[in-house]
Length: 236
Image (cartoon, rainbow, N blue to C red):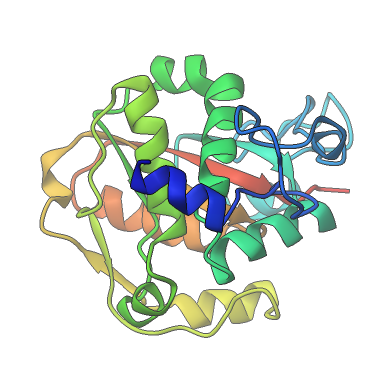
């Protein structure tokens, strides 16, 4: 018996929504559970991809008030409680297997859009070394690698570095988030290698992290930056 098979018996994969054993190894999620997740649908902000109230509304309030430096963006799911719980289990409980479902959904929904953006590489928001050591992985980079492998686009995790530890963002308001992230990121050794990049992260709320990372990429010569988030807040 192969080692992977033994692991599957000892630690059977669970549904990324209800966290119960899947049973059928061919499935990545229980079909009924998948319906609890809200896919992003039109109308959306033309910049970040956040759902907006009206089809005549071009931009969400955040992007209208403070135009982001990235060229455009998209997200797979609306940031509901079900999605928040799933991502929290993925990040903090080491459920790396959830990435397979996230990647599959992202590629099904945005694979063609990603190809049209023509990024020379896919990268991810970097994680503080201490956090990555504790978790054992960078959740955004794991998703980026899955997307890159599926679409045959190079993945490079050396464009940006996390230069200092920051407090968790979820309890902070927009102004506090920006202050918290000041000088949190720096250029990585490969930042000047590319002119077009797809930047991946797990959660987009106010967009502070994506904006700062996109600005840094462009300051160091990247001409086009697109962003892709697993889940995103709504504008209503």
